[in-house]
Structure formats: C-alpha cells, structure tokens
Length: 194
Image (tube, rainbow, N blue to C red):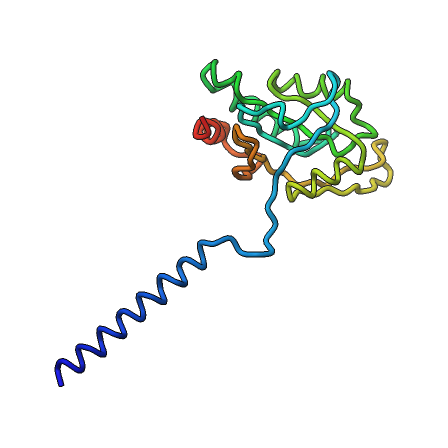
C-alpha cells in the first residue's frame, strides 16, 4: 500500500516537472506573429547619404523627431549628447547618434546639421522623402503624425514617439529607452555594449 502511494506520488511529481519544463520552454521561445523591430536604412544628411551599416563597430543611438519640437526633442538630444561626453575618449569615438527628422519640409539638411551639432558633434541629422521616413518609422515601431495648429505661425506641429533606440555594434536593435532618462544611466547602457 505504501509502495503504491509512493509510486503514484512519484508519477505525479515527474508529470508536474515535465509539464513545467515544457511550458517554460514554450514561454522562452519567440512568439510567432510578434514583429521584430530594427534594421538597416539609408537617409540623407548635409554631408551626403548616411546608412546604418556605415556605423558597424559603433554603438548607435537613434531618435525620431523634428527641429521645431519645443521640448521633447531638445531634451532627448541633450541626454544623448551628455551621455556620450561622459564616456572615456576612445569610447566616445565609437558612439554615434542619428536624429531622423520626420518633418523634411521644414528641416532642411543644412539646418539639421546646425541643429544637431549644437548638442554633439557625434550626432548626425538625417531625413528623406515621406516614403523613406515612413518605412523606417515602421521598421522601428515608432510613430508620428502632423497636427494642424490654428492661429499659429508654425501652421502645424508633429506628435511623435519619444524613445531612444539603442543599436549595438553589429547593427541590431538592443532596446528602447525613455527620451528623458538620466544621462548617467544612458552612459551605462552604452558602456554595456562595449
């Protein structure tokens, strides 16, 4: 009787362990149908075409925005610039920010260069056609939309996602981070990719 109970308990325990292991493996596997974000792209800068593969071997911090943005974009680019400046000099040379303007009608390539250089020499401003921008926005799971401003000389503003996209030295999207994070934390995130 005791042996029979022990046998049943052992069978139940082994069954539970097998089910737990199986379920655990299923949860760790990527779920089909979920999008994978990131990927290569090419846009234009004042100096010519800029492609993500140009930065292989470097950590890239990607950000979508526009130069007329009153607060979010300046904060974001300030955080990126400060985080890069806090790195040791050799690492600074291996980190680059890419600011993608989603407002190509107002953000000329020349102005993008002036705007981004205010925050850091390690940030490049790029843009392209609406089709090119939309494709990259979709690739990275970002968003933007134009909002008409009545009784304003600006005419419109742009609502846009406010994330920093951290890309490793092989060009893979590692994670997204809040635009207004502490620069020290961003510096640590960058260091973790070296």
